[in-house]
Image (tube, rainbow, N blue to C red; front, side):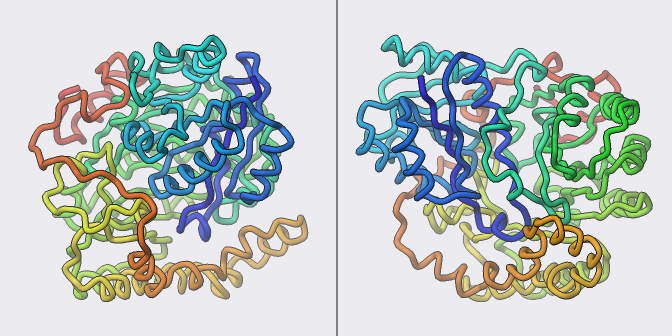
Length: 512
């Protein structure tokens, strides 16, 4: 079969700070190609709808799959599915990915018959059986498949992360991907899943609290094959298992691989595995993103981040001591007052680090979706992008956005525009000389994207598609409701016993 894989357009914050290679879709495309199918890929972050239709007309695919990792992309995906159905009435049209795995029937309902099915869970093991089943006339037994009137067995994991390789050659315009000064940057996966259980996150509910790793040799092979000088490590929490991180570093040193890296981790993991991060700072790690989420004990408790404020600040100090550029995430709650925003702004001004501010957002698949007593004030999919308030705000909505953007403006003042260009003049000149403009263009985009009037106007638009009502608030959620991949306990985590104990000690509960 001829398969066209489609990644939707950029979200609000990705129009400024980064544009990442669609690694998940490349992995699914690679699995489909390994199953003998002819595959094409288009990323609407870097191309246009006009490019999509041109490719559809030229390639004439038998099947089209859309990546549904983010709720805010749902309206675009559904519209494209409907328009594509009109042009290709006999084609298989389906959606897969993280977010749609939690709301499969809702997406099918919105599609109005244009979407044949949703492929829940990891896409690599399901794509081959799905395409084969379509050719044979029956897809109802494919693991992870959900149709309007049928549902297959539970989704399966790939047997080994070493067996799935991304079809990077299918991606056009590879020079369009960047994060910070890593321009261009490729993305790579060292490990998959997360053993923690933060209330606002759905990574652990998607993967059933599993944690699997690729072998250092396979990772090094892939790094050697990358042409991009920058590499974004996509792991939800980097180097949970210290020995795995050290083994990759040793292989990188042995082969003389020279790259510049950006990764994300937790403060407690950084402090526990200091020697790993020190080693990586010597082989190319430049940026480290730490999800603090809150700078007060109440906020940490709400998000189930069992890291004390003192330990968080200790982690920041240690990362700085390694010469790393530190980026921090804080979650702004809709209950914040003007005084609370001002206190956070002052804290952001006092530290040298990059501070990103997101907004508390109950997503399907998270505990706060089921347990958040505050009801949604909007069900417009487009607003579920962690940059809009979808819960009741203590301030009026215009005031909330004024304070939010004023707080985010600290990032713009300290790290973008002329200030950033002054500090990175040599890097910017080198990138421009190489024809790379992503980073330099980013420096002046903030005010055109982060604007309280524009964010408020987004609420005034009539929703094209709305989410279903939230479920009733519950204290305890059964596993079948919460998880996409059912938890399999200790055996699903590729970590040693000491690390498993560390994880349990930094969680509120240790039931799965």
